[in-house]
Image (cartoon, rainbow, N blue to C red):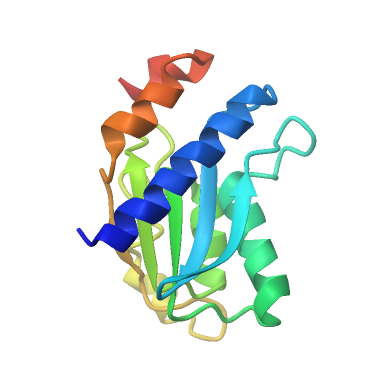
Length: 156
């Protein structure tokens, strides 16, 4: 694991703390290209159910870069993306996904292999190649934020 990955994951964990502080689920995400931070997302599903941290980070990256083609970018997130977020990751053509906590009930890689689904790749007009997926990065630190929330029971 590169130091850069650890730095970006620490930022996601800090973002997840901000989500908890505002009374939302403990998820934080960001999009980076090489060593440059492009956009961040803090869970805001209490305001709008689809405002997951990953989707907000992807949307902000799209606005910042002026394109929906985010090839060459990495999405960092404190928890494994859910199926909804995983489809968006594939549509935005993210090249790499790095996450902290595995999501055994909702994971878009481990429970439902959307991020790994090569069948989606055949729909190249819509979806990207399967991104590289790296999980368990700073998992202990991400779980520590989760411990003080009702969601903790689902991530044991």
